[in-house]
Every structure is written in C-alpha cells, then in structure tokens.
Amino acid sequence: MTDWTRGKRNLITDVAGIAVGNADDPNLKSGVTAILCEKPSTAAVQILGGAPGTRETDLLEPHQTVETVDALVLSGGSAFGLDAASGVQAALVEAGRGFAAGPHRIPIVPAAILFDLANGGNKDWGRYPPYRELGYDALKAADTEFALGTAGAGAGARTADLKGGLGSASAVLTGSGATVGALAAANPVGTTTIGGTRHFWAAPFEIGDEFGGLGLPVPLPEGATEIRLKHRAVNPRANTTIAVIATDAVLTKAECKRLAISAHDGFARAIWPCHTPMDGDLVFAVATGHKSLRPGGDDFIDLCAAAAATMSRAIARGVHAATASEGDVLPVWSDRS
Image (cartoon, rainbow, N blue to C red; front, side):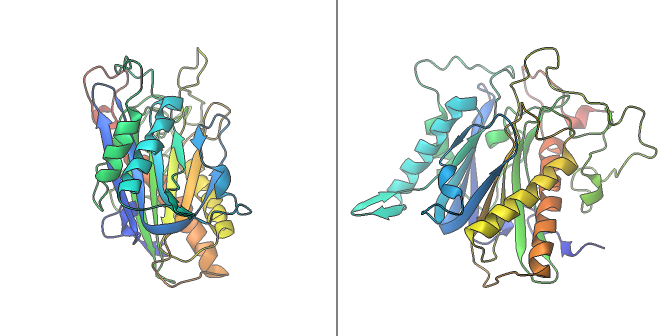
C-alpha cells in the first residue's frame, strides 16, 4: 500500500490554485499548454536533458530575486514555440497580472519547448509561427478540466515507437494531506513501453487502470532493456519531455528545486532511456501554498517520493491517451496488440 491516494480528477488541477489550458492545431500537429497560477506562486526548475529550449528559467534559481511566477508554458514547435510565452503574457496583462516594477506590471512566464517539427504536420506557417496566438488561446482556456493525449503541447509528441502526448496525474498524501500533481508533454528519444509490448515502464506506480492496468510483463520479454531510440539512423534532435510538478504545500524556492529534482526520478521510471544528450528533459516545480503546510523531515521525503511516482504516471497517461490522426508517422498505444 502506498502513502497516497489518487486525487479526485487525477489531474494536476487537483492542486488548489492551478488551472490548465490547451490550444492546438491538428493541421500543424502542434500546440501549447498553459499552466495558470491563481495567485503568484513559488517556483523552480531542474534541467537534466542535454538539449533544452527554455525562456526565463534563470530567474527560477533559488538565489535569484523574483520569488514567484504567474504562469508556466509547455509548447511544441522547437525554438519557434518559445513565442507562446508572449501570448500568455498578453492574456495576463489583460487580467492585470504581473510582477510590479514601478508603475508597470510584468507577468513572469517561464517556458519550455519540445521538438515536433518532423511529425507530419504542416509547418509552412509563413513569416511568423503561430505559437504566440496559441499561447494566448491556451491561457484563456485555462480551467480545472483539460484534455490529455493528443492535445496542447502533446498534440505532436512522439516517443521512439509510438505517438506521445500530454499526460497528468495527482496524489493526495495520507500523512500530511498535501496534494501533488504532475503534467508532462511526453516526446522522448526513448520508449515508454517495454520491449514493444503494451506494458508501460511506469506500471509499478499505476493506480487502478489509469493507463491500461496491465502491470509488468511476466517474464520480461527478451530484449526488454534494448535501447531503441527515435531516428537512430539520423541526428536525433527531435525529442524532449517537459513537465510541471505542483503542490499545494508551502515551499521555498530551494525546496521547489528539490521537488523538481525528485520528479525527474519519475522520468527515469517511465522512459528508457531518458536524460540523454539529445533530450531537453526539464521539470518546473511550483508550490501554490493553498494548504498551510510546511512539510519538513519525513513529510518532505514523502512529498518528493510522491512527486516521482506521480510524474511517472503522468508520462504513461499521456502516451496511453494519444489518438490517431491523418498524416501520423507513428501508431498510437491503443492500436498496439
């Protein structure tokens, strides 16, 4: 028996103070996911992949001045997708949000991108890419319910052998009562399933049948740990899993940093291999402080363990929920026999 239960929605929005919005274009096969903090929230980041694409991540280090963020952005589009944060900023300015700098308000919106340019979608967008407008639309759509799978930043995601997708999961700790939620756009160079089977590497952490309920294959198939990479024969710069881990507990920036580090263990439990030189693997951590709880000692260890387990579930759920569409270059999990 684990030390936590699944949240009511089994989404990152089970964390009070968090809303999520998606915007995507099926013709483009790409999109944006915006994570809105109801009020400015403490945040940090940990990057362990070798090829990240980011905006405003330096300010999230514990020794930097700005303590809180207004929103976070996960986007497709490779470096073009960094424009999405400008659209999110525009929507936040309209709402009167932002860091006070004299008479000015500057919304703080760190962002990360994944590479989905070579997935069969039409990227002939003309002079300017569409991500700024997608970012604006995603923020405007922010709510407690949102789509998983082929949606938002996961709209064009792929693993080594299946379509990837946007996944989310949550856990409520039975001891402290804190909630932790994960959101991941799974687009790794590696695989999320074992040796070409329907079984997920994340199976030991599954709650109920949230991604098929198949458990681990017994025995493990021959070659289960063989390294199968996306585009092995060419330069594989087409990857990255980008994610957010959130809690309603009160944390410092340094504690958020530790939570993000712990959540990366969920990558290692769900993806084989991960954190490669050609992945931009990144986790944002955010603490909304809606629950007046400052976890210390064993409670913080439990929170970090739950972060890892919940992140692994979110990654598997994203791949599990992916749906097929015209022009796909990879099958979806539901089509695998």
